Image (tube, rainbow, N blue to C red; front, top):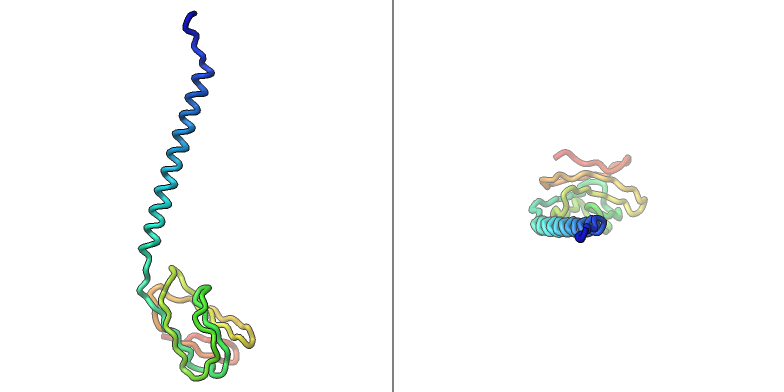
Length: 131
């Protein structure tokens, strides 16, 4: 019995080596996925644009236009039609028209292909005109 095996010590050393190997693999995986995601985000450039026209009923009103959470315009409309062009900058977009006097918000979905949108204000709210 000159060569006693210390099985507990060998078992613990084996588990330690295995744990370091697992941590190493996880770190490599996280690094690679973050690098791939960063490269993918750099490629995103949208060429589509939105043309937003306020054609009727807005003269004299203080209006704010938002696309998603970005303020596009905040002014009193002096003459109609009021037109603004905005480049697409997100996967999905929504237009918010805020009447600053009454703080009423009207929300409209915007197409992924861009396009021209016309709106008119009536007594019961803001309506989108057919294309």
